[in-house]
Length: 368
Image (cartoon, rainbow, N blue to C red; front, side, top):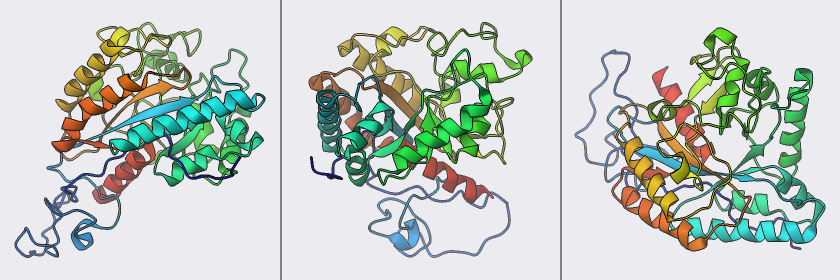
């Protein structure tokens, strides 16, 4: 095996053809100096057809904050690399790795990148000397930890942070940058546990996370969820509540934004492979047959989400997928093909979850 071979992972990124991601116009109300007439590079305003590549003076060299007139949706896909005996079975790992590389290449064809959240796959990369995750990062895919810790009935809360830190350090040993974690919903203070372990944001939050709240703050029907699998609905329950990240102070009041919170939540959409089953249903399905109806449901949901996009805010949305099971390449390409017109029209930009986090923190700084 070739160690640290370059290849791409799984989240989604397509840079906008034009940058109208300017800073909010004078939110403080303080008078500002006049600027040259708009429309020329160097006039201090980043607007179409300028972008960070053709006009770095106006648009900057990296991710720019979102201006008050911006209504783009940053869209992505979160992929959990789980459910395979990667560390102990070389054939299993090699098949898993082949799927990751294959799907990454497919998404790249459409200018999209995956966000790969690794569980057993990390140990497989180490055991067999094939650093697929570093390859993926080098190709622009996002990388994070899928911990799957915290929901156990006998969970010792005192071990939460050490376990999360260990997962982070193991993944970092592959040379990748690790800033986020999923699979940490718990009756324990999962917010503090993740922040203390050095994570900057979390993803894939499901309703079981409500158990860390005081009883009086838990929604009806969620006072005593038996397990994460039984309370696996994406939270917030309403689509409008899932479009904007926020900072959380701790597990006891995480549903309320806290400007000084150390951990950011990127709310999750539903599952790609169970979209048809979840459509119009408050239940969550984790084992479904992926078919054309799921693609129809995902695109219908995308239309609903686009109708909720707010100007002046960072609008993010992503669907989830557990790999997990091999999926039909033709169906995946149909999904990408049907998202493409929204991208071409400037309403949607593919982003990885780390990129969404960067956009959000840039927007925060612009407000201060």
